[in-house]
Length: 287
Ligand SMILES: Nc1nc2c(ncn2[C@@H]2O[C@H](COP(=O)(O)OP(=O)(O)O)[C@@H](O)[C@H]2O)c(=O)[nH]1
Ligand SMILES: [Mg+2]
Image 1: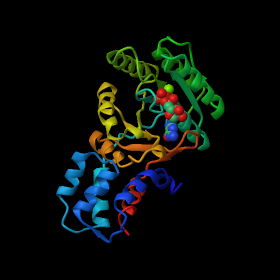
Image 2 (image 1 turned 135 degrees about the vertical axis):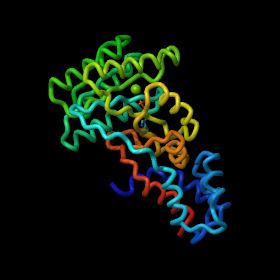
Image 3 (image 1 turned 180 degrees about the vertical axis):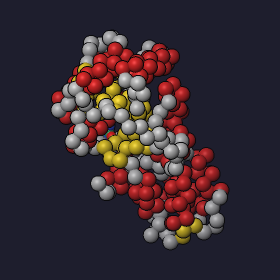
């Protein structure tokens, strides 16, 4: 498991090393400012970090400061059988692929899984999830394009309960004709999940496209306001030098990053480890 986050941050580290080629034992606030900007940490947060630094900073000092910024309010730990997860986020962020990755991960852990294709806005989205279900080897509940996504969510949960399934993963649309349509639809899906199984969905996962860097923050806030997000998964970390944005995304939203996506295959999902993440970025500057 160790080393996956390091590999996914390769481009970010390369970018930092190009502008800061010399490794340090102690660094100045200016060098740290450059490190954070090159990594694509949001500028306001860079200012906040740098303004409180002494004139010489050791690696361990900076590591503690950065880890502190990744601290989040404690999450409510919910136990439920089945455990229902609703996956939300804009079009193309990686929802459907991430559902396949999570399903594959749960299956490898010996858990049973069922998928719900509640992105009924596009026929291609339903077909895509069906193909993944087949590849991963898990059942799926799906209807036709244009059908009520809440009904799909309800049926998936009912079927999951009847079959004694451990994990229920529900896909959703990332775009409708209007933003308010999308908000209403997501709220309704949440209400209907709770009708099918009181307390469900137990976790609302927001999928963020890592290549967008900090520009994803605003969009993430919108989803958080719509239905309330419990955790974030950042995808496509393999394809970006903007890895430092994870720090500002998590800090600004006050939400934990649970996993990162590191490729297009079903194995390419890694639990987010704040220590490994910060260490990898600091390795680019410190000895
Ligand atoms: N390189 C890379 N590509 C990804 C990752 N996650 C998703 N993708 C790709 O991003 C595209 C959009 O993904 P999709 O799951 O259809 O997004 P959705 O519209 O939110 O459901 C697809 O081509 C995926 O293969 C990732 O972690 N790394
Ligand atoms: Mg999709």
